Length: 417
Ligand SMILES: Cc1cc2nc3c(=O)[nH]c(=O)nc-3n(C[C@H](O)[C@H](O)[C@H](O)COP(=O)(O)OP(=O)(O)OC[C@H]3O[C@@H](n4cnc5c(N)ncnc54)[C@H](O)[C@@H]3O)c2cc1C
Image (cartoon, rainbow, N blue to C red; front, side, top):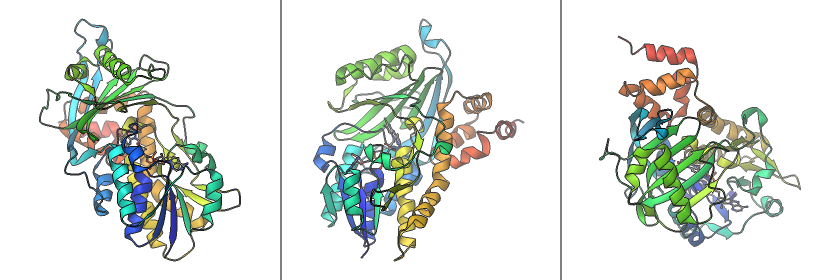
């Protein structure tokens, strides 16, 4: 039986560990936290996952929370009119629409999912080692396994994987992130019966994403500010008190996005660990890490391709990476997992991941005119709104109508007359 070590128990590591386990591999999973520590710890993400990524979980029959988590049927965009927050009522929106997703999206708090999956892995006979691995640990352990996969997210182990400058246009964080999980948020009055991710853009300032989730205390909503560094939203770094974090979140909503603030008159934090603030530079890395004694390890998901969460893609990508690597491992049979195989496994994943990176990096930059035209036209033409919304499930489609001004103009022209 082939022995595989998975280091890091997040979306990608656990999905891979459970998938390999179900195919008969001898899997050891190393996690720096126990299931209980994860469950009672701080929120880590907003983890909205679209249809393709959810399907990978269904394929492995690990979609344990599908019937409890809200079904997100729409994805909407609102753009604050320039200067609207300075006006007397502050309610103008230059753009406001919602697209329909072909398959629903869902967000299950990673505290719920990772803790549950970790317990399942152990119950099914997997070897679970609770230990924060250092490079020296990997150096010691890797030679005892046929393959070592490093799925430890954006933590210190990324130092083993060199930055790929040709695929990483930014070398500093492009947004300051601030998340608050709340109970008691009201529905969007425009579509009270429809669960949707709402993307609210404040030009030159940042974005607020609102979405329903399933958390440790049941259904909740997430308020997620992405602020341009140094701007008016970049104020969370020194906030340590969760209630102050929520009050700041709401104050900024009142100033910039009063239509979302109006839904929040009765909100309260889900729990004392329901807030998160931070920032990181989006980075693509070389997929193969070299250990001091010469062994090789393969990086997984965020370790090798970490995008800004502005497009809500990281957990989706982690699921797609885990599914792709699982297929590459199984396809390889009994042959050695050498450097050539590792590069090929990553390249297979990069076929999908490159589109996520391109879309995400594009959305971090100020939008060019043809992009504004597409987002504006989606308010008049539902087909465009739906296509944009479904691009979050499969960002490769943006290549056909979004980036290139000629293709964007031709697409818009196809609706005239
Ligand atoms: C604010 C925010 C909002 C987001 N919103 C979305 C969204 O809506 N949709 C979406 O798809 N993505 C979203 N993402 C991104 C998504 O959460 C990540 O991309 C995804 O979780 C990455 O999965 P992963 O398996 O690569 O790593 P992680 O989920 O980070 O898991 C890594 C695990 O390894 C553990 N670990 C770290 N170091 C070690 C070590 N040395 N030894 C052992 N274990 C270790 C960590 O504790 C963790 O449990 C968001 C991210 C942030 C920060």
